Image (cartoon, rainbow, N blue to C red; front, side, top):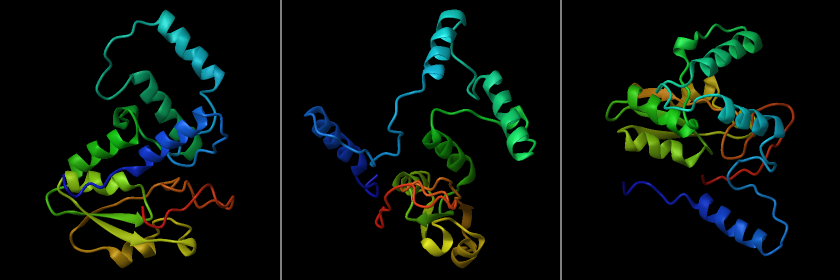
Length: 187
């Protein structure tokens, strides 16, 4: 585990919350969460569900009703058929990435990641025996893993090329809307 660097963003968040508790106005850019609370309709629906539906352990794959809704979303929004049987619901993207890397990686397999990218992804790859390969991206690729970037860094050992949108850590998704947040060149 010596290869895992400190996840300093959490320390920055803690300091920012302390400053905020002292009455100072803080704009949070450190962890990528929204600057608003959970919308009221979601809170109300959660309360109704707790009051009206039995709450037990769920399937390890997630609630079938949610998996079906996700399948429908992909069909309606993207015109892509993803059967609910192929949808897995996790507690966040980190859990999903750990599962995927665990299934796909063998010792020494390379994982192609953009640089900058979310620091934990390279740690996940290393922890599961993979070798993270950082591919520099910038304005010319709209901070995305393009086919050109992937081809340039692909080797016979490459098993995964990670494509993420919005791209952590800066949230830029390549849309014409432009900058979505800070860019950290050393993440």
